[in-house]
Length: 252
Image (cartoon, rainbow, N blue to C red):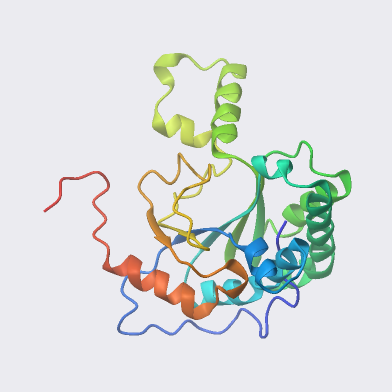
């Protein structure tokens, strides 16, 4: 679960400043945090060092989301396909995630962050599973910012799990519609993302929120995730504000 070291420089209690250009802040932002490995390679560092740098970057982004008035942040931390990476890289990343939860959970809780896990628990190391469950339980009462951590997540797997749950409960086909399916997804009860950001310049969704993102605005930047800071987030929101969201409607 990618949570930053030294998460906040100050408490999450100051009032948000509304500016003249702040006309339409996205309620739910999702980020495909890509480019850690390339960031490390450019510096002749091991890939795990890139993952550590990416983890530390979240301090800036969580603070910026609060300042911008974003209420839900969903982060693509580890996909179902990422298990194919070299074993030492995967193990190193899992150790980083476990250590960061242990170190930062209390600060997240005090700051009003509600942590949710979306994805499958199978294959996640037992120690990390226990820490994730503890983090979710401890922060369940918070409402300052909902942080969805997509760990061992895949959009297709999510839909498969939803279908299996509906079949298990014996739902009749006549009672299954889009709203029903949404209620069986990992993100049940949350609005779909308004804006999906992908760092590192890749133009694909990579099996991320493929149901929920049907009408999301996409923003792609060449900046690697460890370097994606407050100013880069502001650029993404400014682009979002310029979009005409028609939700499948006919162009004017």
